[in-house]
Length: 422
Ligand code: HEM
Image 1: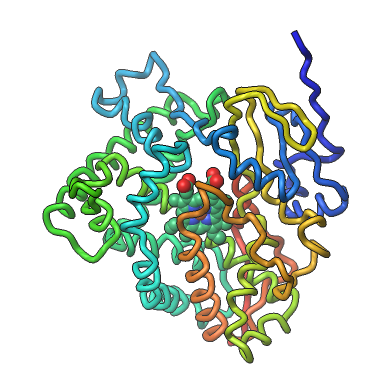
Image 2 (image 1 turned 180 degrees about the vertical axis):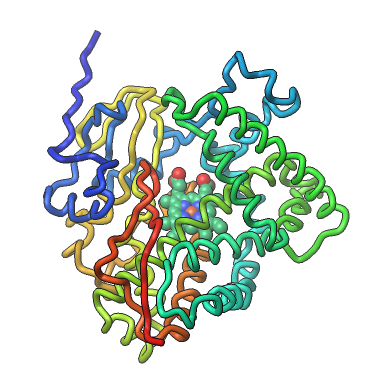
């Protein structure tokens, strides 16, 4: 048996610690290097350099995305879930974009792209602005609010609910279904962090979602409307047959909502933090609105919203001088990649003028590159423009610390106390 060399994690590396979540870029910058190493608590290799991360994300043959499964229903509780609902979470998880590899993934993304088109995204701009203003109306006179729970979260989920075509009052139910479904999604072999009662509850509620969407999609097939659910369910392949199954459409709608809401909300929150720290940055945008695009792009690099992604090796391989055996979990540290000085000069500076602005991997790269990137950029720009137009002097309250929802993959902002002049 050949012992595999496992370089130890650098001192202080703890992706779950509040200090790391507060400032992962500061951690990597102070470390001064971007190694590949083995992190014992997760039993995973960690890749942190910009080019190594890009290699892992591009080489899907070696680094597979097929590593998630549904938390199993405990034997003794099987009877508490209706027979037709027991297989649903497992079956849907096999459809998720984030859990499949080419060639199936390629076909599925191509078919989805027929519905999730650029014109459809661009056409949401009036709805985004309207939703933003409706939310601002509720608190504009108050002079302060929690920007995340009162604005950014309801806005970004509301945009997807609007695109999917669901009635706005169904947002809370939809939110629960997303949480129940994705809560059951765990990396193969990972411990199940729930009680049997919680698992049973989630299986039952995913069953409810399934029943609801079964008739919802059947209606949209019979009578299409101008919405994403209709476009997806009626997309056809080259032979004119339905391109996506009901299971695929339902999974993708939940996935879009899950992948697109808290992430984009956090981008809005982070931008308000950057504008607070450097008011000239936003004032410059008033004089030159063309600069929004670059400013948001730099915000994406600097905010490390997707902290890590996960992959599993399909074969023995080597990266950054470290041998990785087949079947290993690989933590792809996006936050580390954004501060690699080999790729980004003065990585801690917020500099929308940097030459290689779009080299960041905040949206990933390769086959799984974020499907919603154009929507995220549009939403952030519209939301911020409406906020600053309506709330003069908007700033983050300095004495209220930002609260992060600490998780291995996403580093989303839970709460952000802001105030403005009234
Ligand atoms: C600032 C906001 C966002 C960030 C930082 C972000 C980041 C990412 C990243 C890093 C990936 C790659 C996952 C991987 O390689 O395994 C990804 C994939 C994905 N994103 Fe986003 N995202 C954002 C917004 C959105 C929005 C608004 C939507 C849609 C409404 C969306 C939908 C998706 C989907 C469906 C995938 C899976 C694609 C696939 O596996 O083929 N995201 N996102």
